[in-house]
Length: 358
Ligand code: SF4
Image (cartoon, rainbow, N blue to C red; front, top):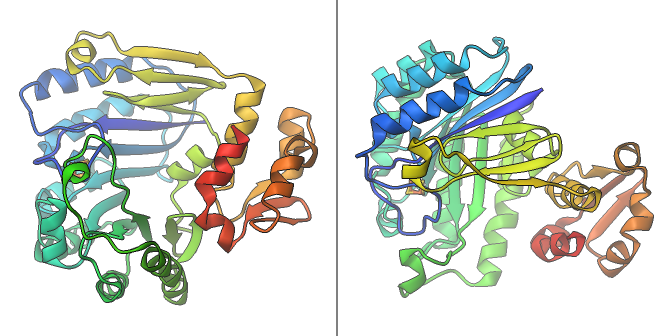
């Protein structure tokens, strides 16, 4: 089975912290969607496990474009239980659009709120207010979406611990099925990099994270990945495919794919993409690459990785292969029968541990 990712790179305005492949220039929007549909039509796959329409802001473009993408995708084997997600941002989502998405068969919506306080949203360069988010959220519920994610961020400039708790309390009161919570990273090549930002210190950042886990757990959202929390049965099927190294095909500008242990990457140049010069990188992964990926992607998940599954896939004993890493980080990694996972302290230094597998 293959999962499909469709990249829509358009946003109304670029947020100040954003380093995703997205832009506000819609000059080539028609040509872009024509090229995207050509790319979809040229690909053959067996059964589809999940679909994710992401960006950018897919809800920014006219919903007719999304309808055309869904029509093109209907040539694949998709059934009514296939998870089909669209990303949306408040300020770009109407009741009509939400209903149109449902009519195309989209059954999950992921909304980027980030913070509850309007003053923080403004500092992030977001286009919307909390009030716009609430209205949009009510629209998606009215349109019949029963599977909803809300994206949040913490460790924001001028954000206090109390503001973060207020965000969590208000968001859980809306009863989405899924919440993601990421600590802000100030990336290179973003306006934030050159701004004086009053960021919470490391201790506050960790307190925000650990207390979010406890609070969300108390509200019925179980942590299943470093930054992702879900009600029972509502984990993101699509994201789990990434963490478990399932096959996926990415369509659109800059989209990445993993098929039969071959990683592919599409061009990030919209002019080339429109002309059909789509794939620019094609790497056949070595066994060592695959084993490393299995470890550092799988260990993002709270259920950890399985020693026996590793052996069945690669014919090697994980505990021998990574003996020195497990010893070096013995206070951060838990080995429990067949399962290897990060403990609470390990999650805090996960990037350092993941680097050891590469
Ligand atoms: S809405 Fe998302 S993709 Fe678009 S600019 Fe903001 S963070 Fe980037």
